[in-house]
Image (cartoon, rainbow, N blue to C red; front, side, top):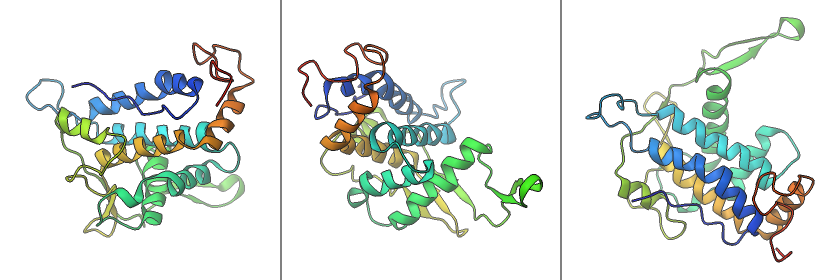
Length: 232
């Protein structure tokens, strides 16, 4: 079975082309990571736990700018996107509250992965003496991942209908007082977040206008300022 492209048919053709060229290829990489580890294949014992989360957070961060909003602080765009479009109501019960999960995905996973090799940090001091130090108050965090079958990953990629009955909440509490994140659930939720954006006519109009200053063909064979019919 093969990777299932994002459903972007409600978006203008130029946006569909951009998604195909710039977004699907990143999610296809995660599709492959979710098959790992392949312990019986020499050299494929790595699980890509942090790598898969890092890619998914990067896709969400990019979508928060390209498809969602182009103003305000980066962190607020990221978290506002999750509040507005992540499928919280469709994921299984048993996870932390959406507000806690949203904060954890950004502040406790995305930022440490991007800025400090997955180490939680805080700022200490002021002015020239200000430093980044290890946050010794941070509770234990986990990334819980196991190899999935191709059939299971394809089930995560379905654009509508209920979530697979084996899906876990994206973020759950752990016994150490911290939280655990499940990459397969974040993959499912990231895809549905993007597909929700593509159905938002106002946001797609905004995206087309944002791309308009680019030269035709820069990011898409048809150009990004409008679709072939000139209509959204």
